[in-house]
Image (cartoon, rainbow, N blue to C red; front, side, top):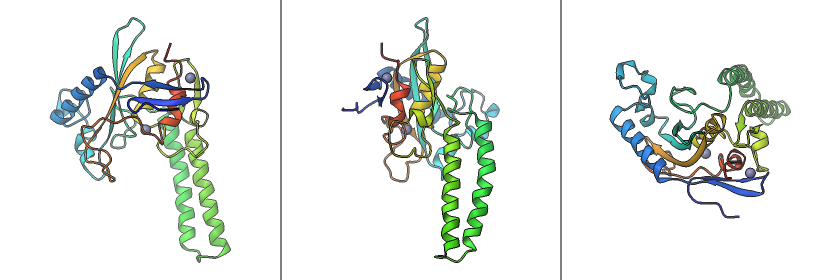
Length: 250
Ligand SMILES: [Zn+2]
Ligand SMILES: [Zn+2]
């Protein structure tokens, strides 16, 4: 089944069809306004007083070693047909998951941090043991295997913290929404489209158009350039967008 080349789309297992939300002119207009804001104010906060804005929200972050990131605009209508605009940045912004005025992540951040804080030292401890063990021995192989399993389990537990909502009012875990047989890549659910659609579904808003653009220093593979619009990604977003968009079309 062909996928539209713009906006966001994904195959829905429940309906047996591709659901699609188009890239719209209206969303592009708002995205252009946001680009002007980023360019002139050099920070992502909506606050007009620079001294009141946290230094963490500066756009300098996007031009450093971390490079740029995707930003997204979702145009929605509420129950009274009033327009509401949602905004998102992909992943974290300078270590922050929550920034006022921006769509939240799909999980509870304190549970997420707690899981990372307990898991990471264990992985590090194993890594130190691996370094101090002679290579190509059965003990070395056993430790490598143990570390692989531990990392995998932490990843699965992290995935289970994600809660995805759609426009039928259904909510499922990331693993349930994922409609491919391949493993779930790191960062799936953290892109702009899933954050925006999830927030819209939870607020009872109906999206009518989306626009996603890149801002900052171009990525390592130079496949993303500042100010350019891109459709939702194939590897992390498409396999969950079928679920997330379900119930949107009448
Ligand atoms: Zn994506
Ligand atoms: Zn569906």
